[in-house]
Image (spheres, rainbow, N blue to C red):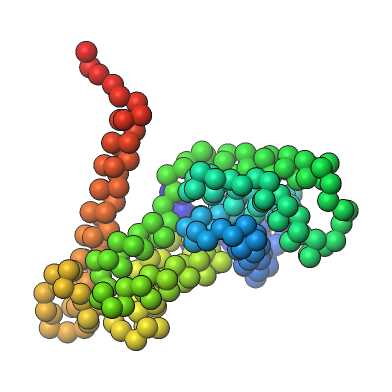
Length: 260
């Protein structure tokens, strides 16, 4: 997973073209909203896919200038690529029509016809290839959503699990409206949004650990928090190892080999 140092977030090619930090923040938020609106039109209910699309778009525009690319095309191409990575279902035709529909609300242009749709499709495919080059064809992209289920199953009381699960997913997507997704490790964002979700739902996860976490009693809140973080990290690492092993098994079944 490719991340950027926090000090370099707004020291990029956009700065050279005098696009200020404040403007870049607004553009990031606008890109995310466009992707969310497009996903809503597609009835795409996967928070993971939408979050990944926002990451791809923000990462692209850290390396490329807003003045040189159509940001709505790049945002739509990011969603298209995210669907391929996460869902294996790009829904190209639906995406084209809904992209056009949303864009008409922003800036009415010519009537839709096959030529217009084909032009948009070509632009999306070109933008998708450019995004792939920027991420150096690295599909091993981890996002916090990949770990929400395990942290809820292992670190939340059963009665609060469902509400916590949905609240964390909403908070993660909101955090990706900013530069957080291209700067911080997914686990950092996950734990941060988990703590905020717990606060909103009226409990403290390290003061009220569930039995399955097997957290020993601590002398004070600070010690409880440190121990809780250690246990959460252990759970995430175990999940990651299991996930990697499963991925290797799948690759072996697809491409079996022999030393003989």
